[in-house]
Length: 120
Image (cartoon, rainbow, N blue to C red; front, side):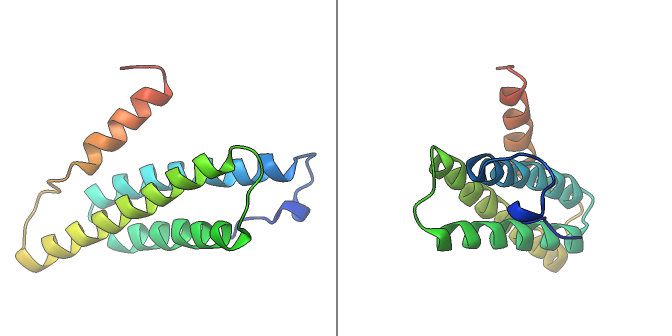
């Protein structure tokens, strides 16, 4: 699949809403990637990392973004860093034969999901 461009949408969405939605999507992709990482699905994590990295690079190339999209781009940057760590840990697990995904990534994802739902 691919992500639709703003002009391909059949909905009345402003460019700022579109960019904000892309950044929000990256958070969902990150959560999915961590879940796949716990199942040792390295290929799925790699696709997620590549997707988030592509979105981040495209947004950085735009330069100045409207509204508070810059805050969301920072969150996207952190998501890319987290997925790079997941890939690194999966590589270590593969090389050392470790069976458990002993990462703080699951804890961070659970905490982020709790915060989004208004939990502390």
